Image (cartoon, rainbow, N blue to C red):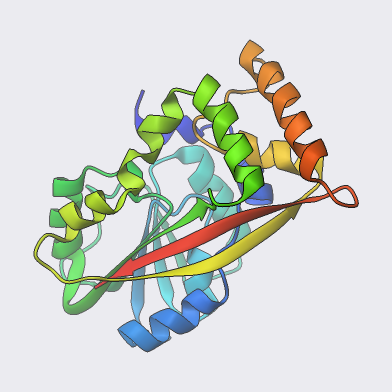
Amino acid sequence: MDFSERFSGKAQDYIRYRPKYPAAIRDLLILETGLLPTDCVADIGSGTGISSEIFTENGNTVYAVEPNDDMRNAAEMLFRDEPKFISIKGSAEHTTLADKSIDLVFAGTAFHWFDIPETRKEFNRILKNDGHIVISWNHRDLESPLQKKLEEIFGRHLEKIKKAENQKEGKSIKEFFGDQEFKHTILKNTQQFTFPELMGRMRSSSYFPPKQDALYNILETEITEVFRTFEHNGKINFNYKTHIYWV
């Protein structure tokens, strides 16, 4: 299956339950890349527009490039009153954007789906000579006891998670940037969930089965026990580490 199709049917859960980026990320980009409100940003693998919001709120023109129709259509509805949000059916390898037209290329929790050599060529083609590339993920914080328990469940039942996580490792970043010296920092990020919200967050993941799959009920039962262990006043903290790499 085309990687982009793994998110078909997941757009509403993605909108409701995926984390936004820490507010500090915008200040970081302004400081480190000199991001200006007049800059043009390409948000690659933009999904439902969670990462695009970083830039529309800064006043940037955002070219949101997304191959999945469900995700892209959801973003278009959310940003329908934002004239600087420009939705594009495209991919990291074929953005359709003009040569040397972009000040900053951003990939938020999407880089692990990209073909690295083809993406590098495409980013270099669309980026202005003094432009910047930023790659970021909201990683689940596997130092969190709750996340460790969830990881054990996923490891037993979800083979696809291993493939989905492979390119989130630093070695893939090094392969992408090659001889370029890049910077890296980590920001903390947290969501709070009731149990139904936690299951919504689970369903938003590419590797999580749909409700009609028999495995869904097995996973829900085991996740229920994890929730009961860690909940306080009916909610759990779902912790992330937001990794940001840039040149």
